[in-house]
Image (cartoon, rainbow, N blue to C red; front, side):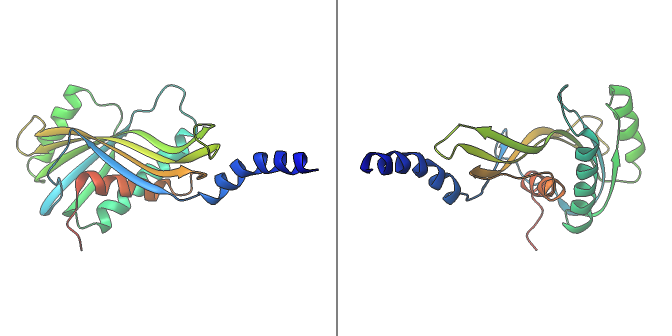
Length: 191
């Protein structure tokens, strides 16, 4: 009987640890780092965004809908710019970027191109004592143009994660997650 109790205890300890340690941790990294704020509360900006998913990406439509909603909400509510127009574009060519820069020069102070590489839940099984480790991840490339310049002033990446051992998240938070990633990268003034 003692051996059976001991065996059950050995089996149950990792499960108890897995479900008791469900604390979520948020991390963000700018590459290269550090970066000065892209946001400028007195500027008018044109924000062009595009997805660049991996070939085996699932739920593309849902992710693009969440990205569009999140970006629209971020630029409407963050105070990042005095005004911002957000538009989705297809994969840009050098000619289409040059045309966007030329068109934006007379109406905007800044052009920001946001490329969404990753927006979604992540799950790792057996990667820690918690058995399951997950959360959500957002990976963006930002290219900032100070108009009328036709070349980017700077280009950098934002890698944002929220999760940890025992955390399982779905797609419901993706619109909010991309807003957090944009805030980490664009650095609006605290209100």
